[in-house]
Length: 107
Image (cartoon, rainbow, N blue to C red; front, side):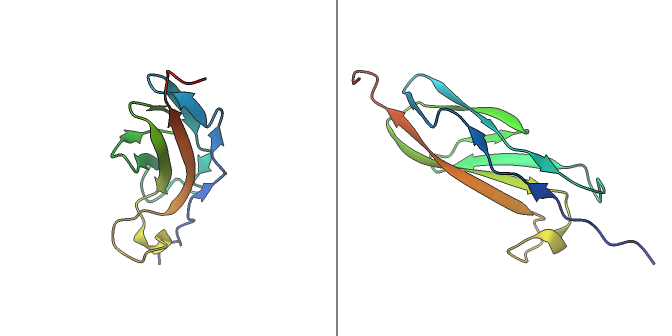
């Protein structure tokens, strides 16, 4: 009989600043751990409401247009039993933040 998988855990996102001018980038960091490093290596993927996608615990969100953008970090160890949605994708734990990209001509 195999052992049970321990689901990943995610700390709140580290984001500072949350607003920059268009043409700049915002650093994003998520603290994520998998107590048993199984069944697959821990994976972190980022998605935003404007279609941006990135991978890794530390990434930069590029402000290319004015607006507010929700950014979501999705952490997975590949085990769908950890999935809050109950599907087979293995998307385990999520955390998000809203970032603002402002007009560079305004102060």
